[in-house]
Amino acid sequence: MNPPNNPRTPPVDDLFADRYLAVETPEHVDLGFQLADIGSRFAAFVLDALAMFGSLVAVLVGATFVMRWLPSGVGGVFETATNWITAGVSLFVFVLFWGYFVFFEGLRDGQTPGKRVMGIRVVEDRGGPVDFRSAAIRGLLRVIDLLGFGAVGGGVAFLHPRTKRLGDLAAGTLVVRDRVAGALPEEMADRTVSGAPLLSDPEFAAVQRYLLRRETLLPAVRRRFGWEIAERLEDRVPWHRETVSVDEYLVGVQSEEVSRRAATSGRTGGVSREAVALVQNQAGRWREYRELLERVDGKGLSSLPSKSLPKFASLYREVAADLARARTYGGSPELLYALERMVASGHNLIYRVSGRGWGRFVLWLRAGFPRLVRRRWKPIAIAAALFYLPALVVYSAIGLDPDLAYDIVPVEMILRAQDGLEREAQASAEYVEVPSVLMPMMASRLISNNVQVTFMVFAGGITAGIGSLVILFLNGVMLGGVAGLYHDYGLDAQLWAFVLPHGVLELTAIVIAGGAALWMGSAVVMPGRRRRRDALVERAQEAISLMGGVIFLLVLAGLIEAFISPAQIPRPMKFAFASLIAVSFPFYLVRAGASAGATNEVRVARDV
Image (cartoon, rainbow, N blue to C red; front, side, top):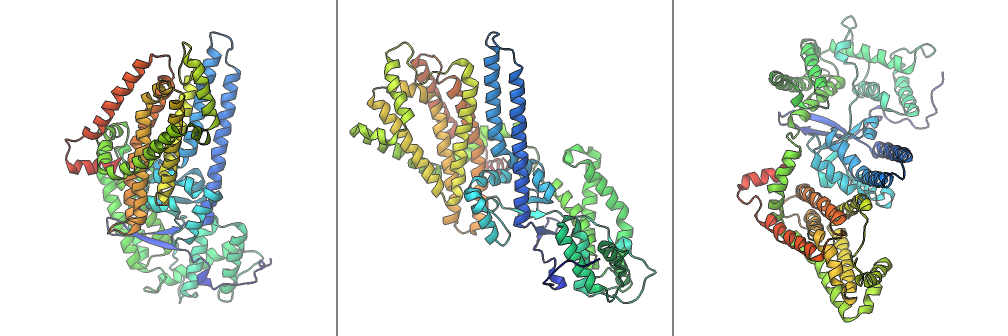
């Protein structure tokens, strides 16, 4: 049995030099977290990408199979069903790309399937569970982190002392490694073994860390580290290499050393009599607490009967106190890890924001969203200027020089305008004609496209607002170019009869999204009296709350754009509908929720 080739042998206490972070819970108990390395995060992302790709393939295959067996030529059933299925697949692709990470990280305790396999998870900076808003910030900013095939996010994480990418900086989150449970040395203590410890404190710590983490190591790394540690200890603890494996040997070394140190109270890094007594006295209570944790796993505390809630809270406080005692008694790393995991699980359950759902979202739309729009009217006004002023300038410039439109407007829009001249003389003179059977597919495409544009606007805020400014400016130029082209062709009524019914909501939503992005980006250049990182997290939370209302507006606008704007409805009725929205929507933004108190305003804005 030969040791692995290892040209360099690092010191024992450097073999597992991981970066740890200690955070304090509201119960004044420190929880230790090991920061996940970039390699683990990249591997988790690759696994998630494969899962997403597999899901997409499965949906496409399923949709193809269903459409293959649909009846054809029966009253248009096949065509209608096919378009509904196509619309559903289009929405699924959009939701999969933008919502996969948000869903799992926000609703599955910070773990996507890939992160679960790699044993890592997302937590808040203070160690608490990541909420849905923070997960949404991370998810939307991922598009910036992935620029350059992930070079932006990977570069920032490599340079940051806590391996944070841009999404983590804005969301106030960390990616940490899950602890691997192991046998407690306090339970293995053998009182028949006596004598002074044989290992130094760094050597004993190396043995413990190796045995604790061996299942998470690559085979080659595991074999090399195990041999390095065992070879250093062989002169003091005999090792029969031919019959005893490395892991079996180190388990025996740990067991004997734990017993020796248990018999010698007060040695640094050892297991004290007090820690052994703590395990013996409290093992039953810990088992009872773990059983409650298993009952509510993935369900939340609301799944417990009301009579069990006080018991859970009492056990949580008791285990938190035991963690503090174990540290004072010099408990083993395994004991501290086990107690920290139990306390962290209870902490996540108790302090996770509850009461979310459609009811709270409706309350947000009814009061919280318009209030937050009014509170942040300045960055929204700046975004409106960045969007509408270029549109007005381009519109005026085309009025002076119509040929300028051909340099700005895409060819397909020019062809549509030229075709509109012919259709204007006919009975059907709509901006675009969409058969009713195609409207579901059009709605799916429009909603996905519009929401994606606003997501890009929002994500650009992390670049100090520069990316958002560019997107707003370019979209404003395009709007002014199309409007100027149709005006030059004398087709204003044709264009605005199509645009205005949904445009009031859609354009306002884009402007609000731009304001949210600029508000988030302002923390980078103008943090005020707060630290830049704190200002970024705080403003990003408000910005993502604004995006919740923006998404609703865009979905509503997309439905109008698909089913009303292109419909064969008299233009006066379309203009009347647009006028109704143009009057009622600003009234909603200005007056909705104005009667509630300032305290409730802050609470609603924070909770959504």
